[in-house]
Structure formats: C-alpha cells, structure tokens
Length: 452
Image (tube, rainbow, N blue to C red; front, side, top):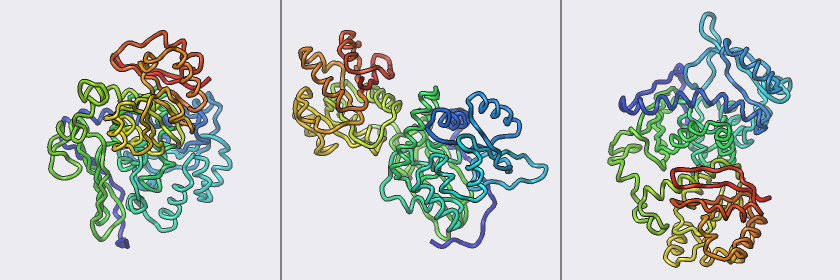
C-alpha cells in the first residue's frame, strides 16, 4: 500500500476503560518495565545472548558501570538521544536543554559492535543482540530500504499463520513484550523459541510474577488499526493511540486471544466480550470430567501448574508427549502456547482417546502407556506423566518405563493432582532422572526432571 506524504510527530497516549482496570494493571505494567532492563542484562550474563542494547539515563551510568565491572562485562557508549517517556517508533533527536539518555551496548566485543553501529550494519548488530536473522533482514528491508516508520503493517502483511504469544509485540508501547526485537511476522517460529528462552531465563532469575503478567497480557485479544498516521491498539482494558505511517485507508488487524483480563470491559465489538464469565469457558464445557476432574476450575488450576513448569525449561522444536492424555486438553494448551512443539499422546480409555484424536490428530495412540513400543520410536523434547500412573503396575514395569524414557526424552514432568506426593516413587525416579525444579499450587505438585 502506498503511504501519504506526511509524517506526524512522535506521540503516544493511553486511555483506560475504567479506573478499576487502571488500578489492576498499571502497577503490573510499571513492575514489568522496571524488571525488563534487568532481564535484558541477565540474558547477557547468563550467556543467552552475546550482548544487549540499552537506553541509560545519565544518572544510571555509574550504576551500569559497576554492574559491568562486577560481572566482567565490557560496554561502550554509542551516542546520546532525547529521552522518551514511552516506546516510540524512532529515537528522539538530542536537543539542548531537554532530557536525554545514553545509548549503550553491553557485552561481547564492543569495538566490533560499535563499528557495525557506525556503519549501520544491521545484520551484524542483530547477530550480536541475538535477533533471528529473518527478523533482522525484515527490518533492513522495511525500515531501512523501504522507509517504513512503524513495522506493524508490514509485519501483519507478512503473517500467514499466527504463532505463539511470544510473537505479539502489539503492546510494545506499554513495554509489554517477550523479545527484544521486532519479529518479521506474528507467526515467526524462531521468535517463539527466542521468546520462550527469554521468559524462561526471567522466571529462573526470580521474575516469575512479571513473566506471568507478561504472558497474561500477550494472550489478550487485541485490535491494531491505523489511518492517516494514527494507530490505535485496543485491548479490553486500555487503548493506546500513537503515531504511525500515514495510510490512505483504514487497516485493521485482529489478534485473537486465549484469555480475558480482570477488569476488562464488556462490549459487542472485538476485542471486547459481551459476557466475560460465560465466554471464558465457552467451548470447554464438560471437558474436565473426561480428565478426572470435578469441575473446570480444578482442571484449569492443575493444568496451569504444568504450563508453569514448561515455561521454566528451554525447549527446542520437537515433540511433546502426554502419557495418559485424556481428551487432549492439556496437550492442546501446551502446543497453542508453544507452536514449535508437536503434540503426541497415549490414552487407554476409548472415549477419551477418540476425543483426543478429534482435538489433536493422529499422533494420539490408543493403549497402555507401559507398552513403550507404541510411541517410543522417536525422541521427545518433553514427556508428561502423572505420578499415580506408577502405582498402576509392579515396580519392574515402572522402572522399565523410566529406563526407556531416559533414553528418549530431554525433560520429564511428573505431576500429582489433588493427591499427596508418593515418596516411594522418588527412589525409583532418582535412579534414572535428576530433579531440576518443582512447582506447587495448593495440593497440586509438578516436578521437572532430566535424564542422568
């Protein structure tokens, strides 16, 4: 689409749907924005990325220098720019007498990075910052070569299938995102993997609350629209109005969400819902009884525990296997959030098996989970199993299963729902697996293990 030949000044305005919504979400957004620079630096100290690019207020420069000294990191000041209160499409030029910030690179080989910076070598810059090459090339093509100011429209045009929430950068003006770069599309598989690793690192670094809030917000339904240089990002709790490229006709892009926020307004037009409580469970009625739960809330809480455990581990593209998958609801949630995982399951109840096949596809096998010849022909990134399954057979069969799983999986998650943990199973597990981490929500417990 051709653009109109004018550019509006940079601006961003935020309008809340209610004071209640503001009171709920504004403090969470503030906490996320406070934590994000620390998460950025942590990805460098942990070795997840070679370097980070940050905007640093003059009064924080000494603090950053002390951090780099303590962590044996190099840094270089790349320049100065005007200070912005919120995210903008471009940096603000430095003006005498107005607030300003340093632009700083922290990490490996600052001399080479500064050379790339001065030469506008975006491909090298992206490599140092851990950006996917497809996204760096997209940035070069659209921002540099074609002169787009806001990459949202080219990004939506480049999106064939929506990916995981990690690709959602529509809330970046609020500081809410899971990656440090602009994805080439809202379905970029590499961005999904990168975002998952960043949030996993953040959780392990103690920012689990902030990660939960980020995940919640990036799963909201959101509409992006743009006309005549003004873009609107509408969510159920707030609207962001900001400058953009001047398009001659209105463009809308709706990103469906999987959750609805507390304090969200009701309405008849997307992204609003006419009745939050009923729509929250629309389409999942009666699914909990198939999986042995007394109600939807109990199943959701138990499955949330597993999802939290999955978010703590670094997974690559591959297979996830649920042993005793019921009707496939948990598998469906996992692969909806981690699109680079391929779902597999085993179920021995005929009715549940057929429902799982309808929900997931032909990768669901019918039979006993202890018959490993059914499914252990390939390796898995992750296997999930309930602790109580080990009580269904003699110890020799349970040990044989674990021996086979040890050879075919990267991580094993063992769960117990609303029943106490069985200490005797720990001895059995410890012969083949090492405990990585554990999670608990009330009487539900989930343990992450990796093969010895």
